[in-house]
Image (cartoon, rainbow, N blue to C red; front, side, top):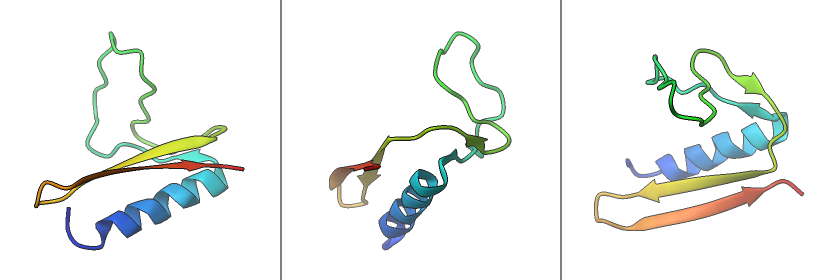
Length: 71
């Protein structure tokens, strides 16, 4: 990731928690029918969100995970 992107991703997650909206996955155009995961393809979806996991990987090999939870 580029320097500072983790902060932007965290801000996006906090906005999703506040507005209760799951953003669309831009690079996913055709979801696998055999995969039972929720695929938000073209447009954001409004749904109840309580907990979100943010994974971060840097060029130096450092990894971090932060869990955000709505109170």
